Amino acid sequence: MNNRPIGIFDSGVGGLTVVKEIFKALPNEQIVYLGDTARVPYGTKSPESIKRFSIENAEFLMQFNVKLIVVACNTASSIALPVLRKRFKVPIVGVIKPGAKKAARLTNKARIGVIGTPATIKRRSYKKAIDGILGRAKVVSQACPLFVPLAEEGWLNNRITLDIAKKYLAPLTREKIDTLVLGCTHYPLLKNVISRVVGRGVRIVDSASSVAEEVAGILRKSNTLSAASKRPVHRFFATDAVEQFARIGQRFLGKRISRVRRATY
Ligand code: DGL
Image (cartoon, rainbow, N blue to C red; front, side, top):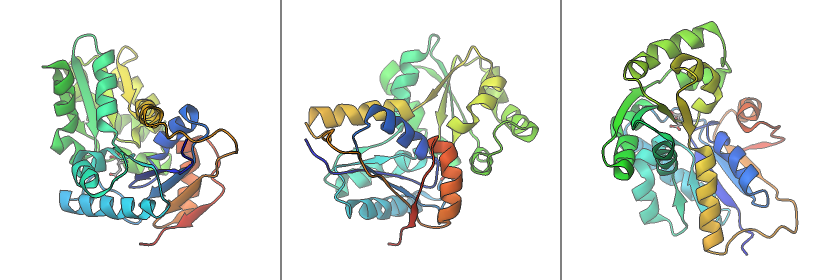
């Protein structure tokens, strides 16, 4: 048993979709969440900046003596995992491998679409991870930078969002994908619109539940799950705009966030 908290970070509110699944899979675990809202989006920044931001985020979480860190951001997972693993002693879990594994399990025809931020798509992280599992698969990738502000703004089902989704997703439907990976933690909020555009026959994969399973597996194996004795107290931090984080965050988390504190490093 180990009652230390799990640390989770993202560039903003998107990582709360991962927190939601961790709450479901591991209800006794205490969470410390950091959203780097002062520097969001990461997806359009350089690898050097993304690495530096990720190290600072992990350092912030380490102050809480976390037992494991989840990088709940595809962009940071694509770029900063090696540097984080070198620098910090606790297990570091990214979101790419769990998502790739799930897609590989679900696809019938090995024709997989991947959507994400420009930085994630440029890095070809999903393509590499999927090829590593399936040998050779047809992976069609598309950066969808406007999806992040649309999700943050709560424009989840309207006409403009649908038109933008049609434009972004046309190359993927042309390639007759049977599975689509939501390679950004913001995108699960747009799942309805995305599914309407690609067709109900295409399986939509988001890595949140697979990440929660992976975390549960690591804690179980190392015998470091938290004891069930008392109700866990979760802490939420943002580097800026804490009220907005709380307001929008509840949409991602599916429940109210009573307090968000300002993080300073
Ligand atoms: N949540 C981030 C991700 O999963 C996207 C937002 C950003 O660009 O910072 O890639």
